[in-house]
Length: 312
Image (cartoon, rainbow, N blue to C red; front, side, top):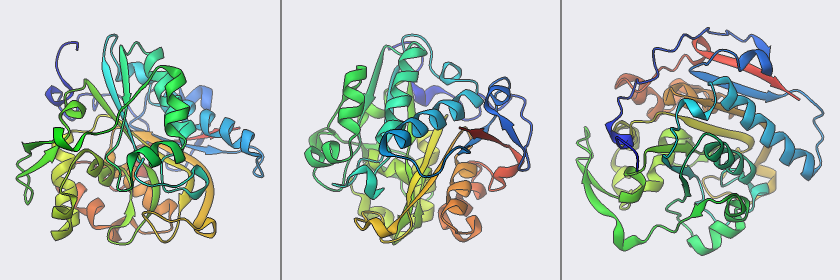
């Protein structure tokens, strides 16, 4: 492993990058890629009624262009780095059911990590359903293995009680291999959650811990505690398909809406605010988003920093 671990980096290490707030301005992808942003929102502007193969291509393009707008993964991945890509692989559901991160989004990120010089890319989550099933049904294992990624099951016996020194959560069992990597790329899907209203970037970090029932005592504060410990440097929020109701597991295709959108950025609160709006919610009504801004994890006003990219 090269140099400092991911936890040694300061949260705002890339915050000095010059950014132009778009306030809704849509710019061509080629222009957006020229100036790194804190946050990019890529929306599909081409044909809307897509075949499965066309949807796969759209997901890939949206991911590529959103990351390019941030300055590319080489802004975050150094040659020789070990990277952990952390999607939501929590449920025994197919991509069409939108309970897990889109596999084409995850595969594109893995490829871009290797292109940026990563020595190793690991992909894993701590699912609620049986991992041997979720990794297959989600399509994620099959999408990333041919690219050279290590698909890892999180051995329950290896979680280690870790001091995170939060406001409410003082310590929690965490899978050590994740936090020992040089970079964690957080890649959740936008979806409904019966307790948290929406599950987005901050809540996706619950896939690195055990004893998740502890968070039910006060989910907004607990989620903020864990996010501060994880010190997010880049998150990519999948809005290709979203689960509008009956989350987090879903299962009914009637609850799924195809949005063909994706956001990437360094401000986790801004990303979650965008995701909340994509679901039709007010960010100010989501406790974790409000708490995240309150403790300095980012800003709810994502429009002040976001670039919109039209992709076709």
